[in-house]
Length: 191
Image 1 (cartoon, rainbow, N blue to C red):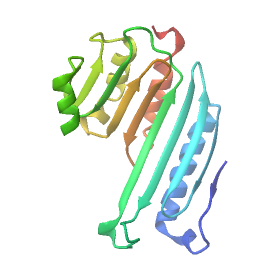
Image 2 (image 1 turned 120 degrees about the horizontal axis):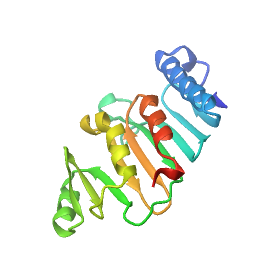
Image 3 (image 1 turned 90 degrees about the vertical axis):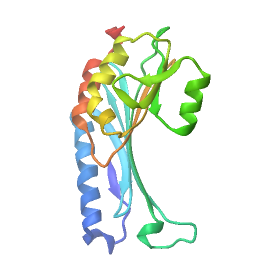
Image 4 (image 1 turned 180 degrees about the vertical axis):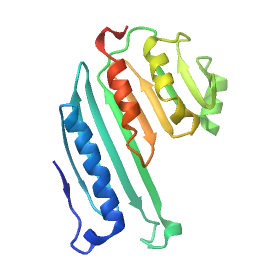
């Protein structure tokens, strides 16, 4: 169950109401998919975690936090808003299926020059991919499904390692349409 940890004064805030609606929709999505959820929210933040058990177990997390400057200033210029969705499934990678996709940055560009397996992601030049050079079915499905989020630059990382597939997105939306597609497409017989 997702619960409010807000003070009584916060509960009439439009930010509180917006966060409440967001959390309720995530909780409903998880429940419709035979999952369980827990979390807390208030006018400034939320943390929702849930598990959906289909053919694979999916761990879902949505997090919103407002961080203030070093002196605790309430000035909006000194505040940093972090809004992240994290979707993880226990999908073991076969040999050649491991990959990581991250945004292009100065350090990632240096790594790309030094490590031959790092290349720009074809069709998404703002991202670097590290893989064995083979495109697995999982990678193809993930790229097709998340194409709009890659094009908008909202993807923080897509990592498929030995034991799991993990996707992190910078977003204030739930993006259930993408998550539902991934849950449907990625299953144990996918290899």
